[in-house]
Image 1 (cartoon, rainbow, N blue to C red):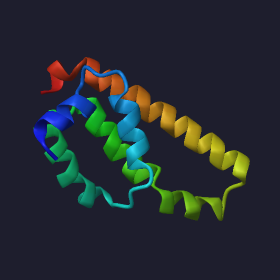
Image 2 (cartoon, rainbow, N blue to C red):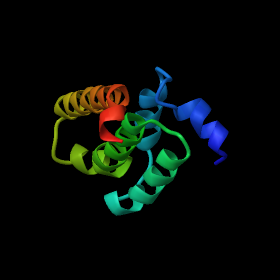
Image 3 (spheres, helix red, strand yellow):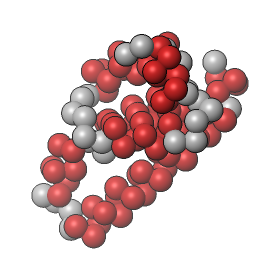
Image 4 (spheres, rainbow, N blue to C red):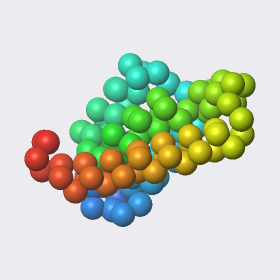
Length: 105
């Protein structure tokens, strides 16, 4: 992806970048080691730190195959509570890391 596109869509100063990264990460199927090179490339092209962390967490914790497997052992109500709680936590952490990225980078 071109750097200016990544900066326009996933930049740290955009209010929707964390939400977008979380939503885009959910249908992807990748393990942690497969998502790290993608996250590093996004970070180098100008995506916010919290945005990249939200992407990584949603890819690993909320991937569609994981949710399918969890649906076999969890009730729909419990699975919905799991997804909502995890999504809110991932989004909150993303915004916190975007706000305080100057400390970490």
